[in-house]
Image (tube, rainbow, N blue to C red; front, side):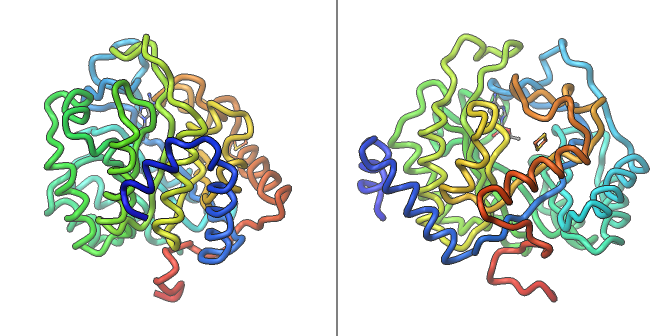
Length: 332
Ligand code: 5AD
Ligand code: FES
């Protein structure tokens, strides 16, 4: 599909049913009916950045900040492994407390388990990415957020679009399975730029792509803006599946925040991954990137049971593999 065709599909509501069915068919053909679960540990909500849309932005003083230290991270990881998770995702704000040495130590300890490890800790230098890889990190998530450079610069004070792109290519060249993605429904975002986002995923040859609707947070400069459209986000996700047929695509938590059945709808429109939280309740509400986050009052066991039941209710199964992109063998 070229850009014109992508724009045409995104702009035409009469194509929605076709699009979702086609993405579902391609998902089944290329990655099958198994759903990969990734156990998410949100280990620090401290962030030096000021992204205009994000509730964890440093200027927000109305959030109780926390850090989970190594030993406690290891407890959650162990629990996740015992619940059958084969991937752990470590996510945080851009928190300099966790310097290269601290992160390497955490990675080394986590990789003693037979799991794939994904990092989602923001922009780092090539040398840092390299050090984490050497310790055994397998994957890295870093959404481009938007490829509209003007919009990117408006949304991200004191940040550089070029550096974000560079980080993604650095990760690729270091051999990470590289995840990216975008927000859908940012103020002044155009359909045209969403098409460019999809083409960027293709150009990068992203191994994972996470798409979520923008949800305004009260403690940010975007508090009075309109929220993103669930269906438009779903369309961007479905098109991504069609254009990158063999990648891993999560049914995102933000989708479920806007639609009570959002993750199941996403799993039936191209997605094949879910990332349940595996930390305890005390931290969940504090990791408030956007309001209305699901699973705030649940514990890891409840989420595991809940999501497995949902997956089975649509005739799909929970994978027992690490769930690398299809081209990589599980024995690697
Ligand atoms: N609404 C929806 N998603 C958001 N994110 C950050 N803030 C918001 C918001 N207000 C997403 C970003 C980031 C991911 C961790 O959360 O895309 O990459
Ligand atoms: Fe957390 Fe359903 S996944 S309660």
